Image 1: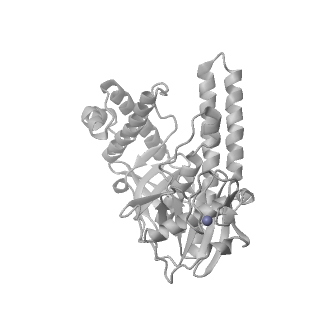
Image 2: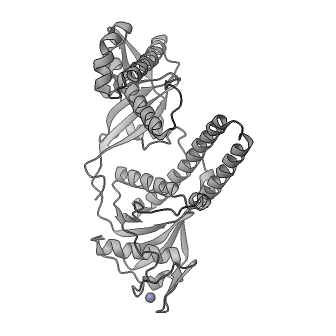
Image 3: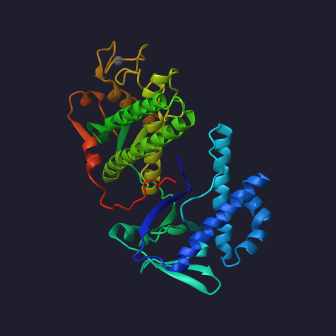
Length: 412
Ligand SMILES: [Zn+2]
């Protein structure tokens, strides 16, 4: 259905069990220098691809960095190419900062340029001919899950002064045959829907109303900054950008939590997850309304759910949401206007608007071929009086992750 035959990546962060040896430190400094040199060369020659950079700079590079292992040098060109591409995109949007460069110490090695003993958690990293360093990783139970999983192969390694990030990869597993269905209507403050298992059904909710609060707060703060720094637009822009980054991080974090809660329920119940396709979604014009209706947290949530589901082999069915909020899930009549919080039909049917929409999404999914082992026999009437099952609520965000080291940006 989606993400078929796709390579999936999961970045896992490991702390080092001791300070890295001096050679590793030199490697980091050399790598940073090489990346920044390559960026400068690329800007001058106006090239952004790794190949073009290679042709342009590799020979000089070899002479300038005679001590560095050649695969690391190639990798530095790759990192520089990525930064140059990103810079070019910003230039096109008119949002470019000054000349790009990397400030923090880092180095990246492709999987053929390092060795990891998955049993002991020791990395063997070549520095130059005849010189390797060993880096011991702190391995928790959480890390063991990835190290011991034979389906996972090793991707690139990113070395930072105090930790390494290893990309584990695997082919997307085949999704299981669902035994039940979880259909969710995606709204500004919550996912609302129904869980159907054979003859049984229950209303479910994943509530993330705090996301709207976060967005409001950051919006207000940006506005205040703009007013306060109206004499210095450059500074205002800079501060606002920082606000935006913080806002994205906070929203992302919550969306990961919501996705985890929804998917662990789906996995436990061997459910297929039905979502609407948000692609065609347009926001109305007008600044304030636009912000209030801003769609990106919802798109982000879907992106996270889809990726995590692909990783776990949980089937996701995306359906066209057209009329889902205006159609009566009992008689199929399409009403002319949008409803209030309650959907009311001429046939006498009435139900929470979002729940009604989620039933429509499920019906569309079934008509498009969603098959559930044992079948689904659900009566929309059952959802009128049922108790609600909460899959997620903001209070859960306060709980700390059992592993503090999982990368928040597992998507990248
Ligand atoms: Zn009706």
